[in-house]
Image 1 (spheres, rainbow, N blue to C red):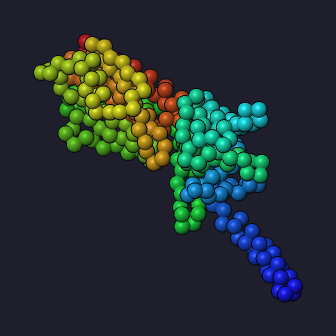
Image 2: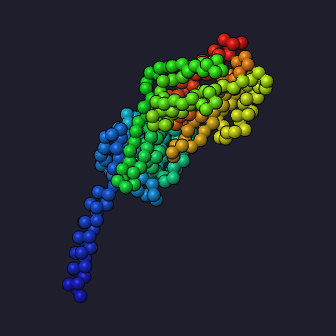
Image 3: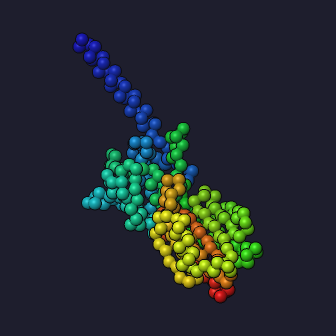
Length: 288
């Protein structure tokens, strides 16, 4: 009997030795901008969610990372974006705006592990997961540091508007009154269009009221006699998307644009939004 127990004990030790490395080898692979990352604490899967080491990925993306032991939270800073992740919490913040995690951040062997989708997208990147190869692919935002502008001209309704040269493709709207554009990774989208206003004679306030009837999750709004703007949020591939819509009454028509981008890139896009709004205002002044 004693001999059998000893044999059983040895078998259990052997199984534990074999299973341990197998579990480590089954850890998901993380690839950032085409380069496979290595970690002292490997990624893991919990409750169907992939958790990855925050500091290693943030640092690989060029962010400055720090740890506040007293508050029990990690912080990453890059390009004017501050990400704070409290441990054992599902409520991190990006520039003070509270986000929600499916699984709380946690400490594993001295490292802060956070759900993949949040870590990859916190600074505006895109994330994909290949379950067949257990591979996480993260792509950093491709927005250039210096933005060049082109001009879209519509001959049908006789207007033009400057737009940022960050889009890979464009397609004329079916009725010919505008254009839709998108980036290669579909992270950024832009629509420019116009409508005749000689009969309806809508004001900026009228246009804002109409816009509010078709969107939700509004974050800011403004309107006067000739102008309106509206910001609202939606979802896209697991990340929060900001939509900025603007319209200007110009003589017998109204010219609009709507641009969308990951909410985490608010700092990067604030200049683009300001520039396009200013250009839209020039249309009204020219035709006033």
